[in-house]
Image 1 (spheres, chains in turn brown, purple):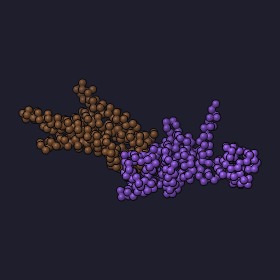
Image 2 (cartoon, each protein chain N blue to C red):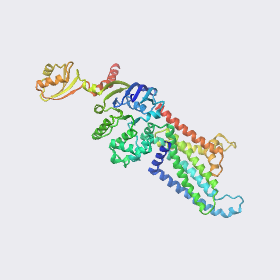
Image 3 (cartoon, one colour):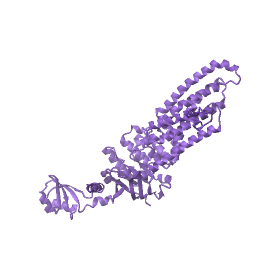
Image 4 (cartoon, chains in turn cyan, orange):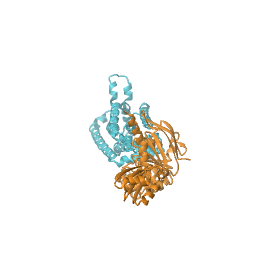
Amino acid sequence: MILNIARRELRSMFLSPLAWTVLAVSQLILCWIFFSQIDVFFSIQKELTTLPNAPGVTDLVAAPVLEIASVMLLMISPLLTMRLISEERRNGTLTLLLSSPISITEIVLGKFMGIILFYIILVGMISLMPLSLMLGTELDLGKLASGLLGLLLLLSAFAAAGLFLSSLTENPVIAAVSTFGLLLLLWIVERSSEAGDTVGVFTYLSLTHHITPLLRGIVSTVDLAYFALFITTFILLTIRQMDAERLQG
Amino acid sequence: MSLITVNNLVRYYGDHRAVDDISFTLSKGDILGFLGPNGAGKSTTMKMLSGNLAPNEGEIRIHGVDLLDHPKQAKSEIGYLPEQPPLYKEMTVDEYLAYCARLHYIERNKILGSIEQAKERCGLMAVGQRLIANLSKGYQQRVGIAQAIIHSPRIIILDEPTVGLDPNQIREIRDLIVTLGNDHGIILCTHILPEVEAVCNRVQIINEGKFVYESDMKDLSFDSSNGLHEITLLHPPAVEELYEVAEINKVEQLSPGTFIVHTTNKTAEDIVNATVANNWGLIKLVPYENSLEHVFVKFTLGDEKKSRKTKP
């Protein structure tokens, strides 16, 4: 049943121009970054050969593309998640789901899964650019895999937060703005603790703090656990919110 | 076993008691008219019956299954058309109905059959491939009804199904409801009185969260003794003559040929006989007292009048 709802979600995304636009725009911008990074790589290639332990093409081309992608999707993701629940509520279609013999958990997970499927397609398309380098050179596939995993986890976190904020309102624009605010806050929250050298609670909460190592190819359990907790928390909050609505109306 | 058993249902919105201790049952073959003025608690009750809203107190049993304890099992017996039909406008009718069928766990190989059946019953055969957004309001409403019957539920709940339709469409939807009433139990929630008179066999009037009136339609329409009648005569006599000959207590003259007559011991039949005997040319006789409209106004406006009077 979860897959059923996810499938419809994905379908309706591709029936509107939004999904296509997002795919096209992100592909265009990342392509630009990709080519300019290749340019940089060529111009410093000679010096690199003289260095011991020099960064390879994966570090100099693939990692920056993924980093730009993560910032760009921070801005785009709220626009994709804003309508998940708020629009169903506004159009009255939420009633269809709520009066069907399915649980609220299934509805919420289905919605989440739908957007994740879209993000898998998006990340897949982004990964094609670095992978095309394999035609001419060797890539550090481990590092690339870590980066792609990181990007997908980050997008899942964006989606979970967006899903929750979308469940709070009937107005998609409010959902989008508040999601963007929350994500941006979590993105920059690390700055406040930069003054001190101890790792504070803000650093721990920060999205950037946990995503950067992954994008650079360092997979640590702490970061994976952070994303797992982040996603679970927001999904549980969404389920609770939808349940409360049924009780309190 | 009755299809729906509702016991002492209560629902608050904040401090406001929107639904106040209502109980009723619905049996197979019933088309129950659920009447009430706007804001009386109709839609709230329907939302609770369909599992969209949890009641504060009370019990809802759907075909013997408690809706709150076993929501999945209970909900599979209900088809619900809310006030605003829950349509995904970017989908075609066939896609949408297929999605609804899957939401109700209809087996894969039976989905096509149930879509065809629902489309046929709702007159949607010609529009299966069209986008719901491009359909007229009447067709969208029919898709809404098709959605409610696709899993052949025992109970169909329709919340104002004919709002915004043209007279022909209203007639078609009503015919459809009557047909569906043969093998489902139906609750028809509306404030359009002729609709209830046309299709329902039972009526309940709700006002300020409480049931104020309950009756079988046949009792309502045939029990017209000792009441008011509106009569229209081609050759009306003087008003005094009317009093005398027809033994009528009170006559109000609406227009030269139209009167409202009050009797206590005369039936409609007596009035007809009197007019025929005097050759007044009776062309219309409408029993008034127990018409649904009269009952509706009496029970829903009565309170308001009383409370107005008590206020200084």
